[in-house]
Amino acid sequence: MTSAITFSIEEKSQLIPKIKLYLKDELDQEIGNFDAEFLLDFFSEEIGVYFYNRGVRDALEMLDARVDELKESIYVLEKPTK
Image (cartoon, rainbow, N blue to C red):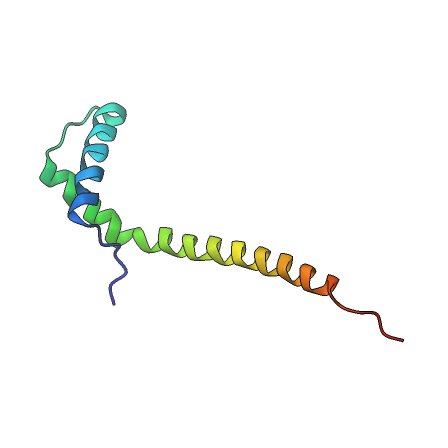
């Protein structure tokens, strides 16, 4: 199993211009589509797993919060005992 995030052709067609624009605006560097795609692939392979893992942790935190809310709702239904 690879740790790289795989982007579809459509996603790459949206991301590559963003990379090119960022490099031009922020670093005054102009690159072509091939170089931008190469850079995207590099970040996907080397850093993508960190973003993925962060997303998993964020999702788990959100799920834990929702489960806690659900538990509180269920405890309200509990009937008193003698």
